[in-house]
Length: 175
Image 1 (tube, rainbow, N blue to C red):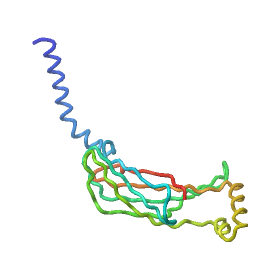
Image 2 (image 1 turned 90 degrees about the vertical axis):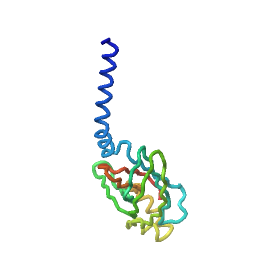
Image 3 (image 1 turned 180 degrees about the vertical axis):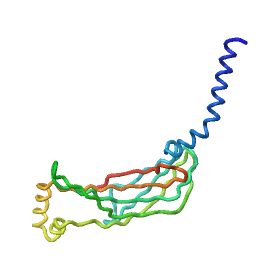
């Protein structure tokens, strides 16, 4: 037997071993979300109605997967203070859950439209600013001095059958 044929036999044995291990690696990749469903929030910059966010969630996968549910949540990250006296609070302004299972075919993109209604949380400072024009300026100045700000995040999370780690996407919004 020549050296080339021995190497070829060893290479074939290695490839046969990989074929044996492939289903195990495939399940592990699916469980960890590798080659599983990827999601992306598609939100237009200008929203037509205050208190409502209209957008789409795009789903893409390298293999056919089943999405069992989709949850979309709007959060407000409220921060006040500086350095050691900095305080953070999180408020859930609105959430929607779509529990209509669907398949994401391999190599295709599926888009699901949604409409999320939310209610902003108004602090005493915001209520004061809304009361009249003069107080609005005073309120803005007080917020600057106290380093008070709110950031809004829209989070979409999909529940994929058989996946241990659910895919999600997060977008920062200006409301």
